[in-house]
Image (cartoon, rainbow, N blue to C red; front, side, top):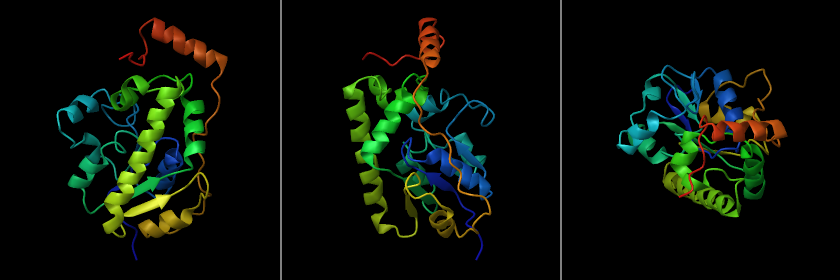
Length: 219
């Protein structure tokens, strides 16, 4: 039995253990990308180039030729369009208890810069820590996202792995799904939520005031 060698798409929401999964997939030998951070591949610019491409209806992203596995945005948002291109691939949905999840999001994103992909998806609700309305929009999207994926893959056995890496981390389910040998290293833990420091909050306000960082749109 050989390790799966097709495309792998992690289509779980932010703060569900996706960064840890990114590191796990790399340890298994897959060329893996986590989002569209500058420097992650030639031309990566935090989504600034990918957003107009997707808005124009072109979902043949340049990263598909460069990587084997994909986590974070924009991949979780365009999973239907990805499936249309890669119907034989493997898909992973990472989930966690929604109360713990939204608290983690609020803590993590408070005081952090607003990324283009967040505004593209959520508009004026891009920062879940901003107010109760933003929090509720994130919760509604989380519930609908997970429900839609479960329903879509219900009649596609063997293509979707449901994981709760923040509760039950471990190589067993992932390696079984990918027919991969279990590595000797422990399961990676990455990107925990922490409260933002006063310095981070101040730096963000200064950058926004100077026009060096995106603001959440008002409308």
